[in-house]
Length: 191
Image 1: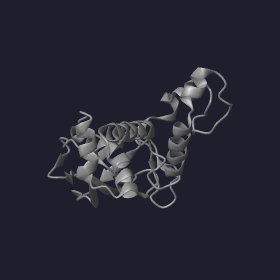
Image 2: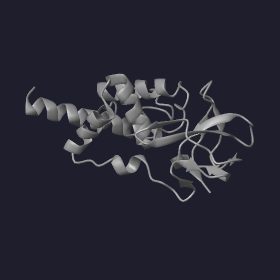
Image 3: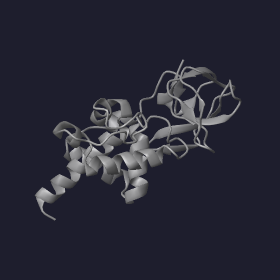
């Protein structure tokens, strides 16, 4: 494989992830009125600017983004690099190290964005107490939003993670208002 081909592959991998984690409302196609807040086309792209904002590449990423929205965890904003990278790892079969190496070659350091230990955690143990959600959280069963931003969860005893992606712990907790179990990571909680 030539250096030009590898560079192009890295560029498109980065562009794909960047579009995948960008909220619909921040997409150029949305700002120009080509798509709605759910990524569905509402008018045909006519001007050069509109056509540039909604290419075949955009259509592919938008379709994947909408499909992800149907999955558990998918309706939350995929602002978490860990979530986006997890999906790429599952789809491509690449290891976490290979994915991170792609970004390293592009001089993009996402390692520090993946996980930051907070004062309410120690050794990946979520401390007992009440927390506010910083994102809407879907049901792990139906994918429907069941826990809204700024609502509360209570951790009655120190909580261990049920799983990880690249050392980002995932916790199973109970949402106070609905009484339903939800999955969160530290970036979705504040005290």
